[in-house]
Image 1 (tube, rainbow, N blue to C red):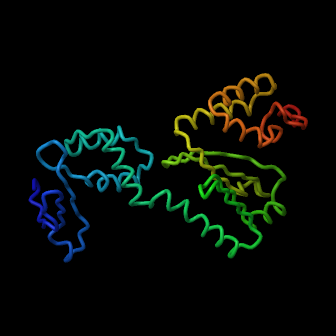
Image 2: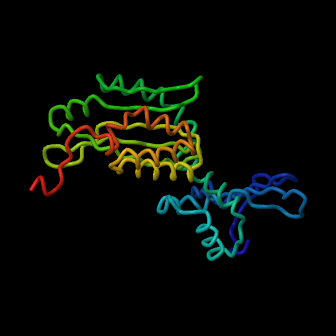
Image 3: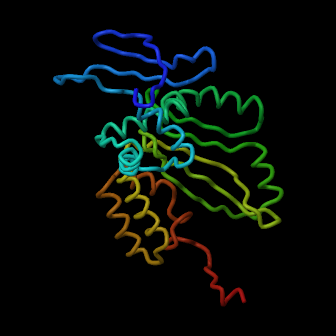
Length: 260
């Protein structure tokens, strides 16, 4: 209305209003506005404006925080929006751009079948508990063959936390090839079912435990992990500390001075 935009009402009812561009058919204009009455208040509230405006922002800045969005909406549109509305608007925008998270997990069975069909010899395992996803491990046959024939017998592990609503982790195993290049070997996806803040704290504790050279120091950090999450402690122990913790490393450590 402010900019004298030509529009038409698709629906104009007591409980909902939907408006589109008058030239939608002629020029394929995607503009659309949806509004409904506010409970216990007079007037209506636009429902899909936030998500629509956030899509181009998320393409450039996918990690933008709701608080930053609040400031941007206030500066650009003069709107003071509640944090919860910004958060849900971001969720809807991400779902519109990338699809629903639960649908992606549901497609893993199809993906497992296609990997085995198109890349025979690959190892892919989906672990479930009563139909509920727990974890996924993938190692493609092409990567296995290449690692055995062209890489050093040494693996490096890296992990990042997923920021969808299920708060899982994604871990990858990489190696060095003959040209000193990074070679991806395998990846693992695990659903933690924890808050992102908690998984970040656990990750920092586990990383600290990895670098400790004495068992006493290692025990201190593992005790903290156990008190915070017995399940996380059990997972870490099951991975055999001698494979990832300095305190239990069975080989002879070499320093730079030894190598020189």
